[in-house]
Image (cartoon, rainbow, N blue to C red; front, side, top):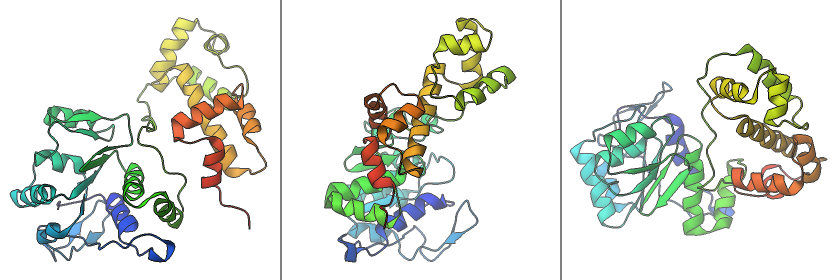
Length: 311
């Protein structure tokens, strides 16, 4: 439906809904790729071309319409595509839009007074172009049935698994996730990883960050970090935010969660208590609290679902 599409997001639709997994208890999906001009190759940003075999009439029989996202946000959609989407929604079909595909739905007037998820990179653009749309960039995806939207790339996988879980149960969603060799599905409210900061270089702060990464088990309060940088806490906080784009507390917490995640993924001998201690958490309970907030599950659940069982 677009001149140039993002290949990963389109492939997510194909992988989740286009593969026969009936042998693993997943319902069969009648999957097809359609466009306004069937038979005409559609370019992707990766240099590949996809040739849709179906036209817009295919939408008239679809229960779920997954819109391929354009490479860049678009403010217009063709009248034919808009009419086909409206007709599909009017007769009860659901519509999925991953990443910039949300702009196509908004351009068609389908998202007015709706709440959607958006990639942090495009959230402000969506708000500026479509003020009637409520954008929540702090979540991975939004279920505002019949419209389902997600932030970019991998969040689209979480959204598609959510749809399968919602309609066909957790066993079907787990079977699809296992087939894709995925870790646990992330909850919608899970905070997406923050964008890399665009701060200016600061050699002093950079050296401190390197030291802190190797000593996450130590007390890394702002007072201790400031003293190690030979700065007052106020000056340190200002320089730290300028260099990293975040606060010392938020940065340390993120690094500790990542270290615990890595330990649980890579070393089956490390228990939750040990992972918490080595990552600098004062207790396993505190690690569980932050893990639940970050991943939508406990450390034990994460390990059970992410790390394959030993033969």
